Length: 127
Image 1 (cartoon, rainbow, N blue to C red):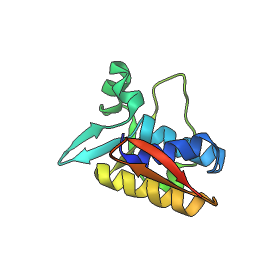
Image 2 (cartoon, rainbow, N blue to C red):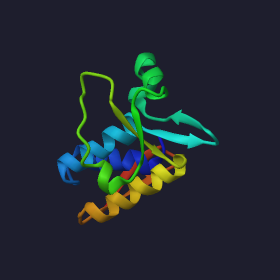
Image 3 (cartoon, rainbow, N blue to C red):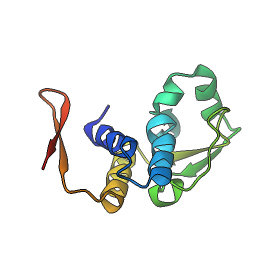
Image 4 (cartoon, rainbow, N blue to C red):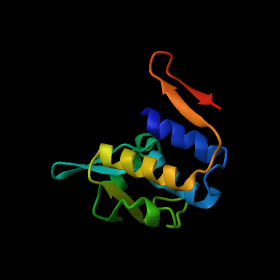
């Protein structure tokens, strides 16, 4: 998992982001995110990767595909017991990472900084 996304996941999980909006953005990106690659949709969300049925559904014409806009996506309702009727699509994977990072920077207020160490593949807190 890319370090920016991983750090956002940790921040959301410890509720340093307002719980509802952070959790919803997490749901529609880290779990059920889609991005464009040329003229095709590609899945990057872990929830999609772990469910062939939902992956097939997400890439079909059945659900709505809306542009990922973190500040509005975070208010979308979702059903955790059924396939989603809507998925959010970023322009590419890097766009999703930038949007998650920018959302986090605007909404996470903390007195420490998390840093990702590529050598040890770990996240450390700097106080």
